[in-house]
Length: 422
Image (cartoon, rainbow, N blue to C red):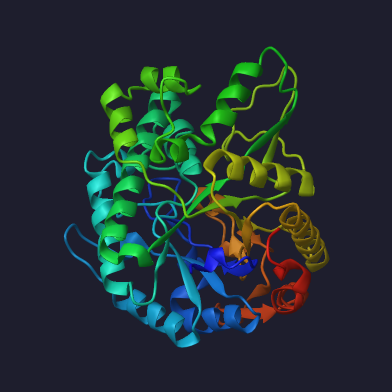
């Protein structure tokens, strides 16, 4: 029996693992493991997760370091991390691609051989670590990838517009399918797949004439890559014309239909203060970090909506694969309590919610670091169970806070949440 079939709610933590290693004038590389010193402190970090009762950790692989040159592989650091997972009997939920490609891969996701390269990387990982890691997320938040790299021109390869979005979405989806199929071939029935995307909602003047078309498109786009990889884009799909205008061929759509893959668990990332964007009458916002729309805190109402939507659309158990609020420990604890209470309610109504992930284990640094020359301390986000505290020598200590105490309480004693699904 797989872990997600036992009727329990499984508690996980995540370690922020955004990697965008390319740089150019005005934009520096961002590697969250480097910024948070996880490369040096991985043993203690995983011990912290185990110590607060987590069964699992969503943990990402720095592909650009593992593959420093085309055809060259350096697994030495990952070897040590996987050994630590095994030592702690902690289950890794492996994020194979959490943004970012190797530095030698020109055009990044738009490279004609991107899918081939990412598939080889995934297969090699599974061959090497299948004795420890059997749960994989081929691509974290592919919709955000496609928006930031293909529509907003915010991250490499800096494409924009309809054609850019379509090109990146198709490339990511092809790599996604190839990676999942390759891992399944290596691990057989032991492989399980957690597909993860961002829960995205829109409110405000969504019915205003100037916004209706955009909102309709954005709502459908939030599912698009998952629809492609699961073979759901057919003649009836609402974005078919957009994809055609953007350059996707009928042959590509047929390929996805013929090679479809499915999630064992559908992960949804939901942040109550940031997952719902507000449209204002008469105001145009492009979206994304460069031109953001205002946000609305949709609380547990938004959480329930996105979990129900993904469960209905893909017919798989769902997992809250990332959540938190940036704020004081009191604010974080309040959201933890409220979100878990809502998940308990949904489970009692029969929704197969199988996992809960607080993200991140310890504080992280905002993505705006990439477009700044300010020190990392200016970009600190207080989100974790452990504070990042800069020491006199510049290193970062992890300091447990009250959020860790509450997570441990829920993870180890929340018997009401562990009741088997109706």
